[in-house]
Length: 191
Image 1 (tube, helix red, strand yellow):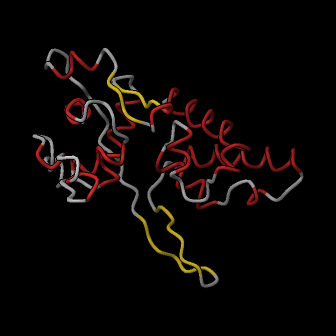
Image 2: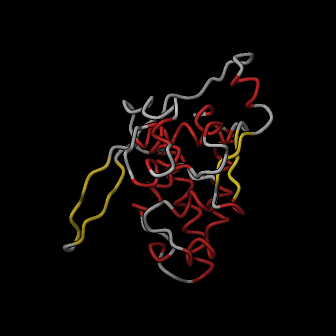
């Protein structure tokens, strides 16, 4: 992942990085010649969710960051150089991939993760209840359970990552995003 960020000249976002690593032949990859890079396709045996977990850990550990002023491109931080040179080992957690199922509810299909952090989910539910009581609305109007479960599976740590969670749009991100991002960040820091 770090090598791919470097080879893409630190100008592309998470999804493009993952497409390159997984060997995508999409127009955005091929038209830029990214299918000719040495890192193209070397991670095709792993899922999109696997690589998403890896990049989030790398960002969380401070080896890279997202530049939201430049299309959320991923940039390497100074400590990544020692890892790339092989001077410092990089230890990451084995990604816990969220299994998903399509569940039919009142004629609509929704993706609900089956594997998520139960402790974090409980904390997010408490936060949701507190916000709902302040606003005098039912808790599901803040976020529904499926959205909280997806947060507990995806562990978003930035507004851009939060927007990738089903059930989180610009309005809810602006209204509630900071509180939920802070809760997730506190949880990840405490371990």
